[in-house]
Length: 515
Ligand code: ADP
Image (cartoon, rainbow, N blue to C red):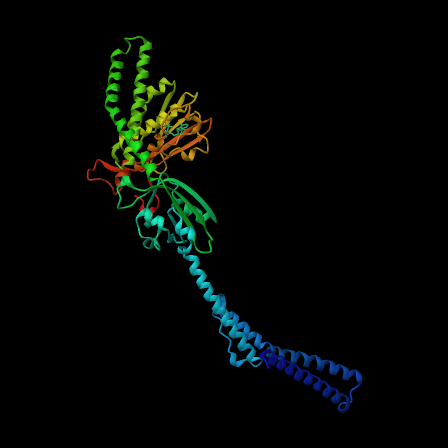
């Protein structure tokens, strides 16, 4: 007889006994009421009805726990193996009063199936988190790295290992920032994007151009440069949260850098003759003032302005080249800001006058003395005023203001009422080589001035910003620190009256590596 048949027979016998007992009680009750107590028919009926109700309810309750005990044991077994309720005690199979053989067999089967499923899941897990078995990931001819939620490298392919000269297995398990020390051309770094994606996005993708890798064993000028693509997926079931692919452009970008070095070399040769030329023009202007035809005097002025512009161009190229080679240093000294600003502005008067523009300067009294590199900061002021002149359109006024902010730093603004900057161009104008395409054709320039200004202001410990409306004009502002704030910093050099700062154009990717 099989276990199920035995169980059915047991249930059947149990129910038979209960029903027979129930009926026997009722017949006994009727006999007692009718023949012993001589109750009337109606009273006998009421008494028997009540007895039937009580007996049925009583037997139903008694039978339920008995009949259900096998099912309860199976249920406990299921709870015992389920991951969420694994702390439930396993059923005691010896104590099952009914269908024990059937339940023992059922529970044994449940335990066996659970153990098989567990093994399958473990194998699947292992295969899923091990991208080494994935043909595409391993054979992709581009450096690829996959990160988990903790920024740990869980997979790096052979192409990446070759690219950065490290062993594949050495990289896996390490924090990505300790393996890939990347530098970007602006603040929108991978790290910044990643943090934003984690808080605001379920899925995100992004590209960066001209990313530079800093490998400790290579020279500064020989570091890999590449474009970077990243894909983020918050709920990836295998735990592959972020994927990075590197597109190598070292040769191409190195050529750009070499071109820059060549230009810098050529431009460097312009410096001496240009200084001579400017000196002679100035001497002529002084000597001949009022003695020659006004038209000739006007020519002289225009020559002086052109020579000044050429000199700004030369300085910009040389400075950018020094930044590229990490050779740009600033010497911060204690200076009167009113003095520095008015001097820089006066050097621009001729240029503004030629364009019929009035430079209006207002400097608040009682400004604290500031810590600045006079030459570099003057280049920033000149660049902002030069831009304001170039992009003034038909307007004839530029307002320059300097004041102390609530934070105690000295802020300077240069406001023009000219063509303004389209909203979509504003986030890019401090990038290297960026020029707004709408005025690229009409106005000459290199797209390096604001990039340089940002690097110089950054090295001064200040920040530079812009507010602009197309067709209404732009206001550029930047801050410099009071000298006592600068000097308070630990990095002051041995020479007490001079603080040396390095300026660099690359933004380190991660705060733990920021210089
Ligand atoms: P450029 O040599 O082209 O002037 P900059 O780096 O100084 O290079 O400026 C970058 C771009 O920002 C310019 O090409 C121009 O489109 C925009 N720009 C800068 N200053 C102004 C301004 N005052 N008004 C309008 N656009 C400006």
